[in-house]
Length: 113
Length: 117
Image (cartoon, rainbow over all chains, first blue to last red; front, side):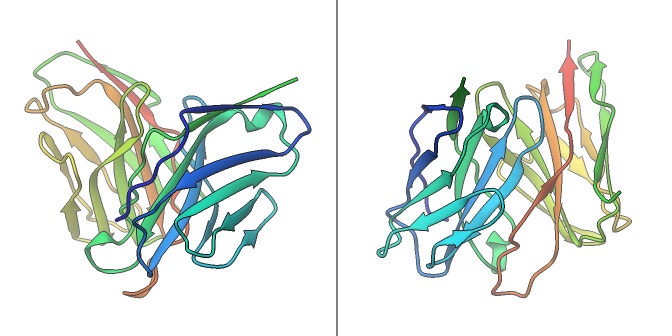
């Protein structure tokens, strides 16, 4: 599975959009981009995933570049409860890599008043 | 409510003792996973199971054992052979997809914090 690179930390003001970048320059054609987040001392929570197209759900938007080598997770109106570690994960479907998510160190997002 | 249960939340053991961590899910998911997390680090996969009575080693399986006798349950035993067992242990589950479709969401339990002294 492709490796991802994320900034170690970011800050965001409450009510503003939080844009979290992720580089995955070695991603292959059948690999998805997933985002999870982990609030302190809790289990990670799925946020969103995508393959090629941009995706949006009730939590966030995912923007994937045309060459798929990078992506951005957007939290449109960050709240204090969005303070967490955000993990960008690339995963290949099927075979021996099924379900084997590789979590890096992620980005610590701090939302401040 | 559907979800994943891990118990206990905190567990303390003496060095040299085996300890079993519980993980139960009522989501009717086929696949289950065990991860370990050390302070300031990401999660690392210990074992995973795609179906009852079958499981595979993850990236750091040494010193751990699992069983999958029921679809709902995937207990993890931390044996005395695990050199650094103190960690936060997370269990997860997901729906089974076809061979070419990746599972799109893993549901995680609240975790068990194990301390071995």
